[in-house]
Length: 73
Image (cartoon, rainbow, N blue to C red; front, side, top):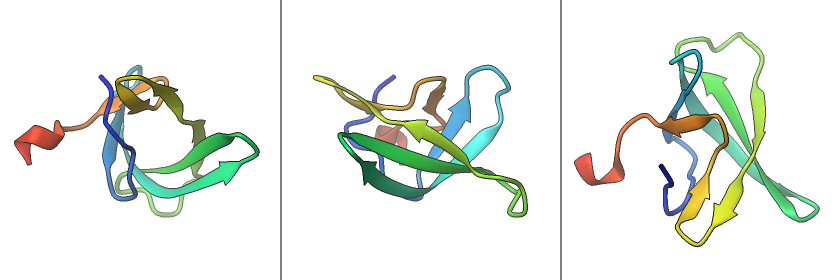
């Protein structure tokens, strides 16, 4: 599932482990956008960096899905 745009504060679920991650930072590196994720409830653990994929439908994080739909909020 694609989100129109990834934003800080969004919650994403890891497809494999079903753990919920919070987007804490977005930054540009060369021609790519990188999202920095932190596992929800684990402030002292290491952060995960994921390259944002772009398509005509919007942006997405490979290996992750939105924890909730934007339409439900």
